[in-house]
Image (cartoon, rainbow, N blue to C red):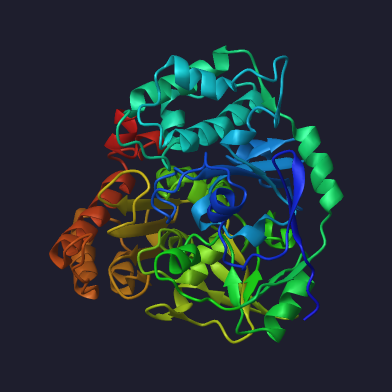
Length: 516
């Protein structure tokens, strides 16, 4: 293989070149063991605690359809840059090629202001509000709050306390408590302004360029093509190579299971696979679109998906992970597939230049098995745009409100005609079987009905008989069976005509009210 070495990225005020790291070396390990930057901490090594949070900046791709705009996504858009908080513990070092890496040590020299020796406003606010006790989690909080600071400075707004809580959902603190940290997040906007010097970063990234990466470690090869055509050719030529997107799952294989994943084909450098657009009655979402951007676009069309978006993993995971990776991974407890299945999503699979379309509800064959053929990959997800008379809800049940894996997830949709009769229904569930699955028997009960209480009870009985869920650490079989029927009743209560109005997106959970 013709290797292109080294990997190049901007960090610590200069362009760094890496020529000897393995494709699965993590950014965190490189920072602490090679660069000797000890500010970024290792807590869980699986993307849960946020102690290793860093900022990754890259030249923002331009969406052909105009989505997402800077206001549509939590990625910080500053000029031509997209800046995202990510977990360094599960981000592989070669994926930084062509990007900029900012850590807590960079906040002084990577920012612009009158006093280069002054603390960054986030750091100063943490000091003044006593937002640090043992200090282990503090660098991660500081970097997440820096992303929040930049986002709101760019927009000319101040975040609410609830918005700060949502932004910090991926950062855990064991001793300080969150009140002083949230107070710091509010105070930082009142201190002398100090912004990231994006001009310096842009110039460095332009100097690095956008050449496709072909990298060879001592044990495995790594490819990061920049164009869709090149990616498709490589996928066909190297069908055994591991497809890598955000590494939010694969990173755990390496860190926790010590697995050798072999050669790596990275999808995250292909901007054509990050396009979100409206076309021919569909919302089309490229497979490499970050989960954060994808769900922002979905919520823009279906506001009732707001809560599942906020509760989907954590902000750093949503910024790293992709919608295509979540779907192709095929976890039976994933939150993306029930949501998309309820919306009637279709997948566009591609092998080199050939495409084929398949409904998402026919994609999964068995536990972690799907319809993908050798040399194929998921190119995009097509979601039919909302129709008149359509009601959609997604309910997530988990032990924690924030940053938790679902015990079960229900994606529910009905569509009614002008006279109120149900013309279409899709009830999709995660956590109830070996795959995410539609409850076709319950759907058949409600289609053609008037959505009465008698119909609800019949549908609940059909729903319960359709699944035999397992018992595990998250929930028992009996609990899942009971809750899934209750969720269908909740859906009925929120959507039956002439009685209770549908709840607003910020009122769909008692927790949302408690967090205000």
